[in-house]
Length: 458
Image 1 (cartoon, rainbow, N blue to C red):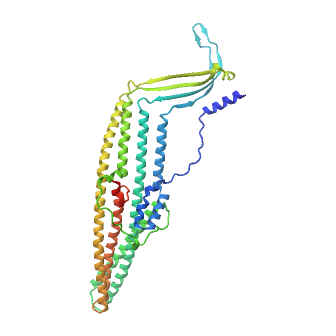
Image 2: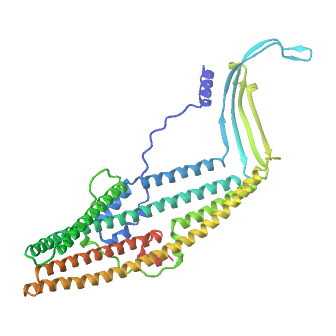
Image 3: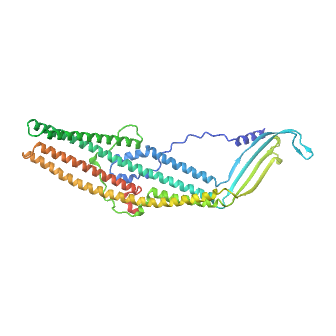
């Protein structure tokens, strides 16, 4: 009875029964350090920081980037398993029925039927004399490094793009606020010009010009509303929201970062994800080239079997039924149709391509940094000029009010001065936001490094 139970267990072990794995927990973004929250806190905007945390928790691109890393980690394990011995059990239970046609010389074997119980454990191991399997594992590990840098690049791109949209949304809010004030002011101008026209103090062309300007201002307000709503919809996608508003700060509370170094070493690009990806890709293909060369060498596989082979169940565990075999199997391809030579050449071409991509990544990194610096410096200068112009226009507006109080200026003069002030105010708002966005662009070009500490990493 015990023998039958053992046989049953061995047969069940040999059958490949699919297992139902427990449902795994969903994979979330798992590199909060890639968010670089310490850098974003320099903007002194709690709403921005909170939104970035929601981005980390909810964004599907970050989740997929984490999943790609997990997938490639398993690929490394799969390749490493190829370096280890392979052991398997493949039992057989069959009934052999032979006819009497089998004959050995003058001796004829009569017809017979019998069971065969065959339970071998087979082991094989490719001796990695030339290190090919180890090189393949190293290649897969470099591929994993490429995917990790791609994940980091996703963090940098998403956080930078989200922050830029965040400040563009604040600009849209402020533009809409100013535009409403402009429309209100222009409506007053139209009303007063109409009064002048009614009493014959201006022409119909003067009135029509002011009315046309009013319609232009209203059209511009519609564009600002569209821009604001589009930005809100885009940011909802970032945060994986189906509806709801985006929490944001008031324009008057946002700050411009000052004291950021104006010059950087070109070695900064060594921190960029694209540079590190190309660097890892060169190593990966370098390993592949070595593997392709070693494919021309012979392989040696150690193999063996141990188990039971009997024709009767009651003799299955007898010493006569025990079997064992072992040996070394050398193999080499004498002719492969040029496949191995073509593979080696293919890998060499890929290596040259990887070197070119690496050099291009260096040039692209330098270009992005230089462009980022140019935009940052230009935005700063433009903001300073527009702030100075706004200051002068504010003085002009206040002078018009003072002149009105002493009777040397009309209400229309004050309204025109106010309208001019609001127009300049829009330029000042735009340039201030552009300065912040150019700072974000410089952060992105530097590979997500805190710009205040960027020269410390050289």
